[in-house]
Length: 231
Ligand code: ADP
Image (cartoon, rainbow, N blue to C red; front, side, top):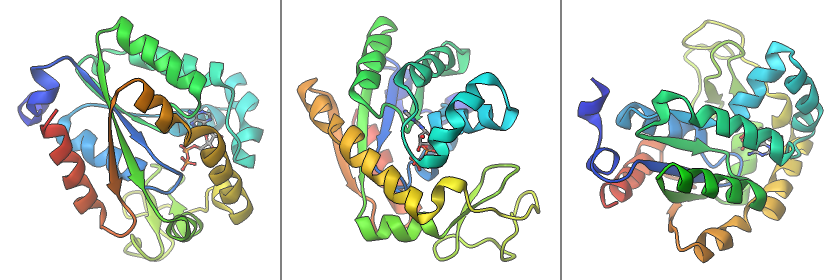
């Protein structure tokens, strides 16, 4: 029963949206999955949602594919609509984890209106990671094309080199993990996303910074969990 694993912040108080904030490669996806398991609330990753549209070959996927391959941001109204629809699903009622959204001021404003309208509170956890660590992580990253699990040659190698532990599929380098594209993604983060920290401060939101450069994922997770228990 997922409810038994919920912390008080997710059952007694207003439902809570947890915004995981940080550059590409800061571990948002990894932390989201750990939090999802622990708290029984869904991970909402706009990157995963967009990639699944690209894979399915529909019109939305076709419209965003080139931008994603180039490492630049997809249009705000496209992601805002995706998130708005996703938040209507019943599994989001008690709370959810936002991974990779919002990424621009327009997205942050859209999210705020949505959350206010639905009586949600939110906290922002900012994962801080050194630039060189990010480059090493992203360029060493491999992904299973079937289940999406991420591996890293150094920090999280698969049991058999080049093969997914879960699916047995050959791992691939995500198109946007190539070095030139990684730099483009980091520029987008620096110019469009990082300034949102000021926005969250202006709004007076709970904003926590966590050093996530060197600690293993479980240690970072425990720090986030500690913060949430105080909410
Ligand atoms: P990362 O954060 O590791 O770069 P994501 O999987 O979150 O990777 O995103 C991959 C790509 O999907 C981004 O480079 C961008 O093109 C697109 N994308 C994902 N989320 C958003 C968003 N909130 N706004 C605009 N584009 C997005």
